[in-house]
Length: 380
Image 1 (cartoon, one colour):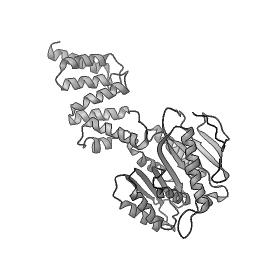
Image 2 (cartoon, one colour):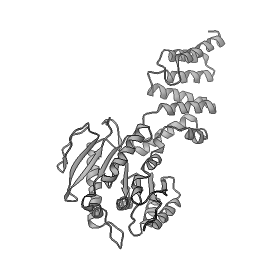
Image 3 (tube, one colour):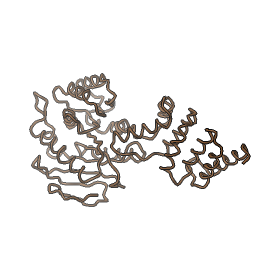
Image 4 (cartoon, one colour):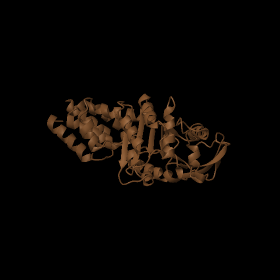
């Protein structure tokens, strides 16, 4: 981890092994010190890239976001991420940070400085000192949720994903947000969460939801959740996990549903489906995802189901690279030669597989059965 000394950053906790670091951050933009929390994955590695999640109302939302990030990354629902929480409850400073002009609906002078504090100090500081990925998300609630939308008004959105929890909408925001979301060509994930109990913003939020749903653009990934049992206070605890599930859906291993509804129904070769999936992940998140064994097995099952045996060859080469000590690659290659009517090559390849480590459902006995069957069929 780079140990660059930044004059405006004062650490209260300097342990590099700590999961959460608390910092007093002295902002030149705000001309004041602010309390900031950072979460880093337990096995943080400089060689890897981590998406960055910015959490406003950090006192209330930071722990919830961290808990969800740890859970989903542990069970492969999302990549491990760095989370930064901006504390705003002391003296109700959130109201000044995120204030807007009552007529125009644009940020107040103090809010403009807070906007620059986040975009020009906090995020660059993390990008400089830690191994952050290009993919960035912002989470806000109430007035801070409304404030996060101002990044949509920039020509290039700083954030790829927005989780808006019951936003206290500024004037005209119900039309401005859909207009801006419709203008972007980059991939944008926008998650809108609303309580069932009506408040002064309910009608406008529902109008915004309707307008966003009318946008026909593949680059926009929009989801709306309304929880009947929640009021304006409890809604802050709802929906973050479901939002993560949708935002990072592409990153998840191939599920039985994806296998049946997408992989098997795709017109492209089965291996191309896997290649496209991983290329899309790299394009979106800005780093290569390690190939998941579950995905390799799903593709292998799809190859057999669709009898697309040409895909066995590139699958075998990928397995040799990613699981080089195991029999996986050579076993799939042996099946490829077997299907292509090249028994000599198949026999030699299965013999190589027999001498390597077992993995998943593949055993030495299976390779030996292939070897014996080929010898019996062709008299070797």
